[in-house]
Image (cartoon, rainbow, N blue to C red; front, side, top):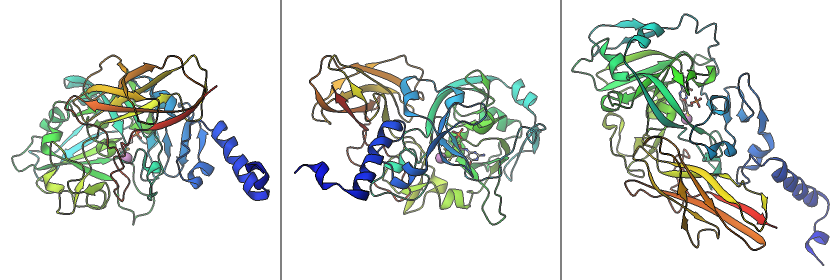
Amino acid sequence: MNRRDLLTGAAATALATRAAQAADLPWLSSQLPDGTRAEAGLATLPGKRPLIRLADRPPNYETQVQAFQDAITPNDQFFIRYHLAKIPDRAALQDWSLAIGGDAAGKPVTLTLDDLAALPQTEVVAVCQCSGNRRGLFQPHVPGVQWGYGAMGCATWRGPRLRDVLATAGVGPETTEVWLNGADGPVMQATPDFRKSLPLAKAMADETIIATRMNDAPLPLENGFPARVVVPGWTSTYWMKHITQIDLSSKPLANFWMQKAYRVPAGMFPVELPFATQNDPATWPITEIVVNAVIAEPVDGDHVTRSGFTVRGVAWDRGHGIRRVEVSLDAGATWRNALLGRDFGPFAFRTFSFATGGLMAGSCAVMARAVSNTGETQAATLKFNPAGYHNNVPQQAMVTVV
Ligand SMILES: Nc1nc2c(c(=O)[nH]1)N[C@H]1C(S)=C(S)[C@@H](COP(=O)(O)O)O[C@H]1N2
Ligand SMILES: [Mo]
């Protein structure tokens, strides 16, 4: 008796459906929860190419993994993440302005887009990655948006430095945090508005800017038009979109989004610049990105020929740059160095490629892992945390050599 004879009725149908799905949905990781796999679909928003829709109200759409063959993610393939469903449209942003004040500011000012354009402009290539990227691959599963590999992207961001913007109001000596608010808000009054804060040192850092351009174009509406905060090296919860209000504050921002959400167990993920005003004994705010790599090609479930194939993807870290990417074709038993592509700076994606050469028929478990310029390596096993953050366990793509 073989396996097929044992499978009857519902079990056989379920298996057949799954196999068909794996073939039809190469953009959806097989490790995601069944409910997520059943409901996610490709969807095309105005001005965007198809993204993986995980939720609509508020919109949460991720980039297909195949896009990560390049160091720069095109604007029309960039992922979208919102917490709250009241999102401004273009008409509402027509008379956009940015108010700067707070108890530690010299004097409150209101800036227009022309005022931002009049300040010295700077450019940074940086990875915008959601803290919960790859949350859907957590075992055991944890609540929250079940992101696969695509809640991230890398762009060339351009605009004035945040510190030059803050200087127009005057950064008073009492300032400890810089509070950020955007034009979106909750539908229900009881829902806390999405506001975040930065420690003064990161707000004043060379790399931190207010971007009005993304890859040489205005920001797409859903990615923060007309201006967003860009905090290279930090997960994108701090990258406030449609920024309308900044407060220089002598006090820590005490709200749901700082004190309850976006926190990790204290000490689990060491950082170089502590966010001291927001640390408590049990938890720290999630801040610096951990080193990671993604395989864009081949994708899980691909069939390849015995003449071999090329493994392609990107690696990134908190801002030191990538020293090395290694590829394994045997589920991590042996590793060989990949070739690194062009260096777009320490906060950017670094492309890698590895040509396998000839292969024997059978299955092949492809993995990639990165080492940063400071020697930081990816976690060999998941550092479990209840909110599902910082998953940098090396990815595995199963391919069949025919
Ligand atoms: N105004 C506003 N800014 C925001 C958010 C938001 O909900 N509202 N979400 C943050 C989070 S958690 C992420 S991951 C990024 C997502 O950026 P993107 O939508 O441009 O990809 O925006 C950040 N900035
Ligand atoms: Mo996020």
